[in-house]
Image: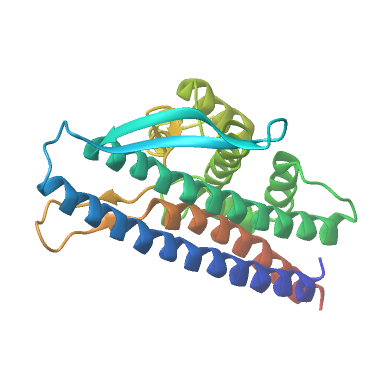
Length: 251
């Protein structure tokens, strides 16, 4: 493999992911302001009181007029729930973009190594895992406590659900089975099922921050988005490192 090319592509990937993470921070702060405003509004309203009435219109090209096509009402609690899932959907689109940038890196690295072009995840991961012992060993044993091939396949399946089903996961059990089956990792199934389940909630891809303690002031959150992107960066690093070692051995 041309390690200098792969090294350059790896650093480009990191820059792209940093840009997306900055957008994620902007979204997080914006939604925090919205939740704070709704909470203040909630303190002055009855929980069941309708506080929002919206008529939605469209420009009718046949009459040349703005016409109503729907009407919605909502309580503060309903608005908070809508905002909650809207924030999740914003994180989902950022994760989809992160995976697509990782896929570009992996595809380019695969081409450098084989002279063949592919965007299919399983054969690319199998190639790197089967041909570089360092990758295979660290896929299975790492500080995450999860096989990285399973983790990368999870993100790929999440991306597919986001792009094609608006993040819906109608059958979580089948979703989990596909992740495990396509990863080719047959052992530790219960561990992998538990791992996948934390990213699916109410039949949707779930990426929002999760509280990690109950302290009333010093709250700590489990950053789901950061962890998922960390899996992608970690696998990209394994490929970059394997390319560097291959060059050293061939000198």
